Amino acid sequence: MMTNPGNRLTQGQFSFLPDLTDAQITAQIKYALKQGWAIGIEYTDDPHPRNTYWEMFGMPMFDLKDPAGILMEINNCRKTFPNHYVRVTAFDSSQGWETPRMSYIVNRPKKEPGFGLVRQEVDGRQVRYTIHSYATDSPESERY
Amino acid sequence: MSMGEESQPAGPKDLSDDTRVDLEAEFNDSHVKEVLDTLDRELIGLRPVKTRIREIAALLLVDRLRRRYALTAGAPTLHMSFTGNPGTGKTTVALRMAEILHRLGYVREGHLIAVTRDDLVGQYIGHTAPKTKEVIKKAMGGVLFVDEAYYLYKPENERDYGQESIEILLQIMENNRDDLVVILAGYKDKMERFFASNPGMRSRIAHHVDFPDYSALELMAIAKLMLAEQNYGFSPAGEKAFADYIPLRMKLGHFANARSIRNALDRARLRQANRLFAGKHRSLTKRDLMTIEAEDVLASRVFGEGVPDTDPAH
Ligand SMILES: Nc1ncnc2c1ncn2[C@@H]1O[C@H](COP(=O)(O)OP(=O)(O)OP(=O)(O)O)[C@@H](O)[C@H]1O
Ligand SMILES: [Mg+2]
Image 1 (cartoon, helix red, strand yellow):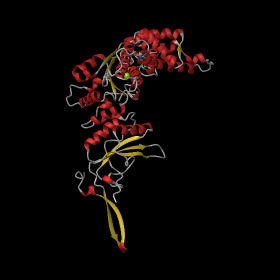
Image 2 (spheres, rainbow over the protein chains, first blue to last red):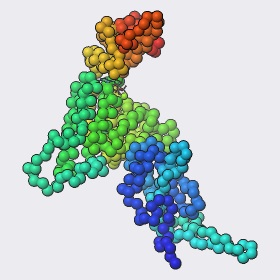
Image 3 (cartoon, chains in turn yellow, orange):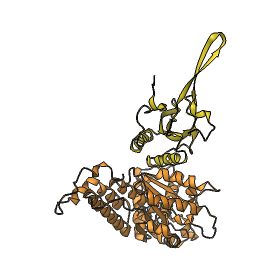
Image 4 (cartoon, rainbow over the protein chains, first blue to last red):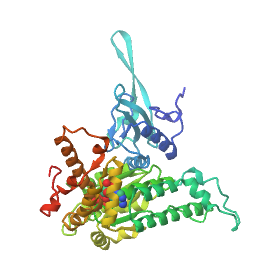
């Protein structure tokens, strides 16, 4: 049974929707800026869901008033890594939160091979299951 | 889009050439008048500057209308240069300009980021571009005010990183015209030399505004305004003493127009406090607390030694 046609990565907000347009991304950033959250841009070519820490593209951006500067950086990141996953993260530094409050993908590879299910037989005919990203079979920089 | 949604639905493009256009209503709608009135009220003198700001506001208002009838396309160039001596009100006017641009819909947020060379130029290779871009990102949606812009350009050192910053600014000023407005400020002669050696910069500046020095009378009016803002006032003798102080101070070095006046008043307030404190057995009235007397002004070194006061203790 095909549960995820096209193997689109579904992580973070909006990931079951069609890709966000730049106007929609701008509106989301505007919301985050209004809340006073710092915005970071991150990229990776290892989309395993347990790979929490992606690489940062530049420093997180504090104290901005307008989304245009962030969209500019997103486009720089897309230009540098056209075939990587790129996400935008909004971090809330206020006490009690101190955590990302938003996170969504703004760029994905043209072809996403998806994940395979790996079965490992262990003692007593027990089976352990895990998932494996096909892309990470190739070395870094050749993945997508 | 710098114009926001409000300009979209208002006018079908195929209206006849005789359609009536209500400039008055447009002006009132934009609430620009309040900013211009504040400018008039809060800033003494500066006639030529105020006139130029009004002209620019009128131009933008008409441009906004023309846009509605699809007579203009594309974002107009709004980058400006403010030239004048220190303390002539350049930063203050730039703040108001940001507000005017915001009310007319030419910048989205209307904030002002004021920077100098140190905020834009880095210390080593690879430091400048991120630094300049960081500042630009902060200024987006508003106005980037570069004070003493000519220090970005140091021709005597061909490896100076300032040039890199200039090039990024040039690119942004061209490509992101609806994201931010750049105002370059500084002394007139140095600014002219800067433009002469950076024609790219000159050609991107649409409006040059020159700030004249204040006359002694204007400085007196500024002093009274500053005192009134803080609920102080001169006694008649105090006013006379300050009127004598102004021309003396104007002749000395490091004279910075309205800023020197503000500093002189700060020192007078300090002396007033000391005077009140020294005579503490006397019971004070509210008027005593509000009044700057002649002796508070006359204690300045400008009178005796003919040098500017260095720190407020003197
Ligand atoms: N016309 C004026 N009326 C009242 N106050 C004024 C006027 N011009 C300047 N001031 C006051 O003088 C001070 C200095 O003004 P401002 O910082 O705008 O000068 P500037 O031209 O930017 O100086 P610099 O070139 O040194 O940066 C401010 O406190 C401002 O409020
Ligand atoms: Mg200034």
